[in-house]
Each structure stands twice: as structure tokens, then as C-alpha cells.
Image (cartoon, rainbow, N blue to C red; front, side):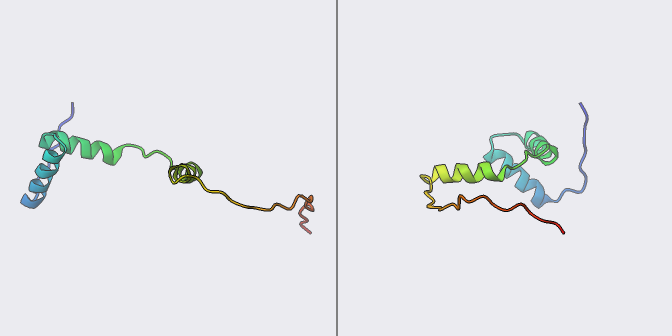
Length: 79
């Protein structure tokens, strides 16, 4: 395993890291490893449509009264 040394870390940052580690039930070293993993891990692509559908389901759904024009449309012309 690789080793990383961080120099000149302020006391305030060190104190905040220790407090964060304690809140998460980890050692300071484990907390820093987790922070680094989270920082470099690829982020999953957000699917906006899926997220909106999930939000609608969570709130009980939405009823839309949309009247559609069923006449065929004219093809686009690019003159």
C-alpha cells in the first residue's frame, strides 16, 4: 500500500477532521482515506428523467390533463 504524508496541516483542520471521524465512527486515518476515495471516485451519471419520475412517485404522483392534437403534422421543410 502507498503512503501519503501531509505537511503543514493547520491545527483547526486537524481538529475538524478528528471531529468528523468521530461522528462517522472511524479513526482519523480511516476518515482521511474515505475522504480521498470519495474525492477521486467516478460520479454516477444523473438521469434527470428518472429522478423527476421518482420525485413524482414519492409525492403521490401527478395527473396531467393534456389534450393532444391527433392530426398528423407536416414534415419539416429546410429550403
